[in-house]
Length: 300
Image 1: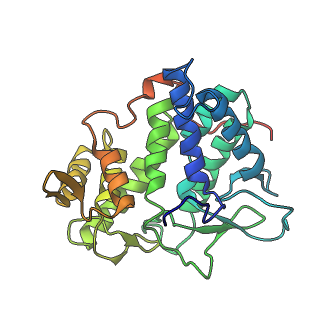
Image 2: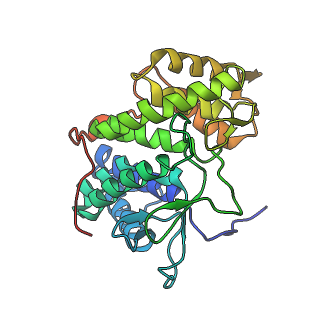
């Protein structure tokens, strides 16, 4: 307040991923340009950020898979301890772009391993094969690669988890990845159907692991992300989600906002995912990386 200071120097890796991607995009649009602050060129900075992510926050798990950590690893860690993860940070589309830009094939291994981890997470047994399994905000990964609910956080799908579906849709936009499409069709759409049925027509902002709403209030940012993720796969559901988001659109004089004009998080996601009728990744054409049907297999 009233000055400039770092209040928390612990980075969040989802922000770093988006930061690096934005810099790579800027480097392609303005290849000879430097940042407005006169620092290093966009691509040069992007390479430095991507290298930092790979060296400090991509962990080789005891089961042989690469895993994106939610924060940089400091010091050594006990391989017998569970690893706390935030699935909404997983972004195979980012990794593919980073591999193309850096030439580091570990990024493609991370993309393939990430889909394996999502598959195992969503296949967790619940005792009833017909129950929907949602993506949690946080989950612990055991040394053998299986997942267990963290006792202090519980298994809640809400304010973090919804972002995974934007990231998987981004991979589909960039590479046409069939695994991303499969997960949206077979996991996200059934979850949305259950939540909308049980929450009175809107997707609930928090759900249990079987898709049952914990609270029945809805959020415009979440609805907008789900709307974009499901476009082309289920237009009926996508339009219902668009209506849900737009019901929260308000005007205060010349200022338009979703739900609460002071809610930066909701408005960022809502505007980002509702901007246009076409692709919400307007520079997807800068990266067309080829359709892939299965995770890639690369050595660590």
